[in-house]
Amino acid sequence: MDKRIGVIGIVIEDRENAVRRVNAVLSEYAHVVVGRMGIPYRERQVAVISLIVDGTTDEIGAMTGKLGAIDDVAVKTALTKK
Image 1: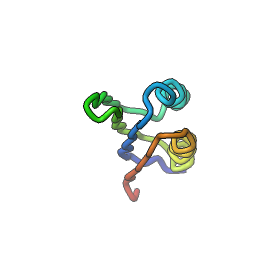
Image 2: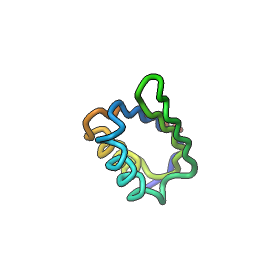
Image 3: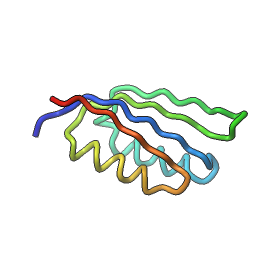
């Protein structure tokens, strides 16, 4: 299966309950993550993570599916077409 490059945006609204679970998923899929930037936006009580990924649609979809299943976590993805 062809690999694609993409960007994933993650917003964590409940940092105390979700951050550990999000980091566990990201560690599980570390082989797909090319780069990561995390910003704790304390004034709004959220954390924002942006990822650059390189993997198959199955790998990226599995990762974003697990992330999206975590309560108080929103995930959006944009991938190359080829």
